[in-house]
Length: 109
Image 1 (cartoon, rainbow, N blue to C red):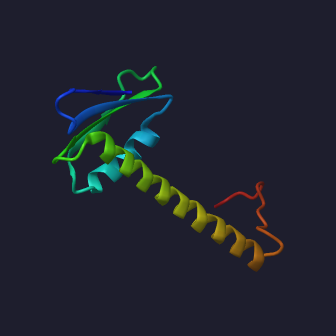
Image 2 (cartoon, rainbow, N blue to C red):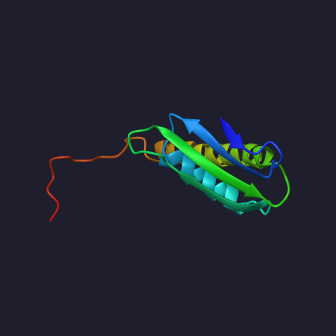
Image 3 (cartoon, rainbow, N blue to C red):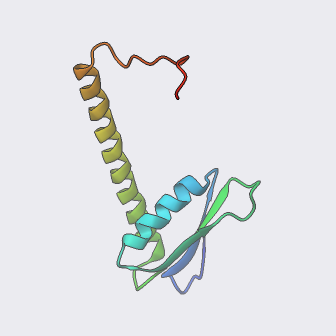
């Protein structure tokens, strides 16, 4: 849900339900990398609420478009991380056919 001025599309607050710091901080990070962003931040109104508010102020572009672009960028980053992780797991399994020999009962000195 978008909260903002009808006359100024460069400044808006977006509420996202059923999310927490994990998504909010990631979105904030990506938004801050965008040169079109003058300010961005997030808040969680109450610890018991699963709701985040993301505030975006831009240098001229509509805040909604900048947020949408940042969410797309974040999705690409996450896909890259997932692909890199999956490749590393596959490589490990191919190079270590017996897997990891872990003794959970062994005491570490």
